[in-house]
Image (cartoon, rainbow, N blue to C red; front, side, top):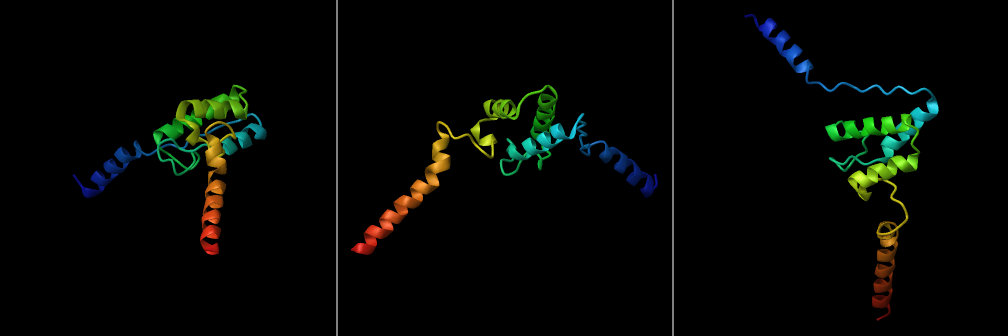
Length: 126
């Protein structure tokens, strides 16, 4: 067999494993904007450093598909975020709600900074 034939069959074989870009079709631009806004606000459960919009791992693709289906079904943004939070935890939302244990996330840095300032000022007076 020629080398070019082997390369051709190799390319065809590997092309089957390349991820296909999903096409999300909406009936109006408002739903499309909501979709892209939501997927940029939801953290990838697998990689945790990026949104599902920037991730191509299988769980992110499935979650994007679920968000797409929920938007088409008429769910609100809050309902979609509640679904994601219930399924993957509060850390899946880049903008966590101001409630319960999230108070520490929102106000913890300010409390920490205040304690550091008190320590600094008390040591400075001595």
